[in-house]
Image (cartoon, rainbow, N blue to C red; front, side, top):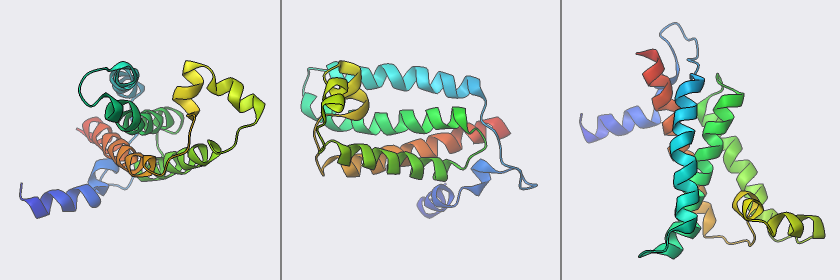
Length: 153
């Protein structure tokens, strides 16, 4: 497959999401759960990684996997929703959560004091997270499309 053809298929991959009659392909729960069983341990694993580049894995690879996780979780809730729409919603909510890290009321600080709270809503605002959120949502969007493509075969 040529380079131009590959990018055309990535950015115009209606063929990954729709049947020939225009009906949207549902993603099976089993495939999404299997994907989550891969992403979740990997996401927590990067938080505990202490080898070379540990700061990058903890701060940025974790953000990418966080976005992918929420894209896949959203497919469980809305199996017929557009992968692009899911990725956009996940990105929007994550941006809201990132900006909320500049707000420090006592109830949020109590949540952030736990590992799960830090992992889910974060502790400190940084602009450098946003490009990795875009990467993660893009990966989530493509992942959803690939799951749908495997369903259609």
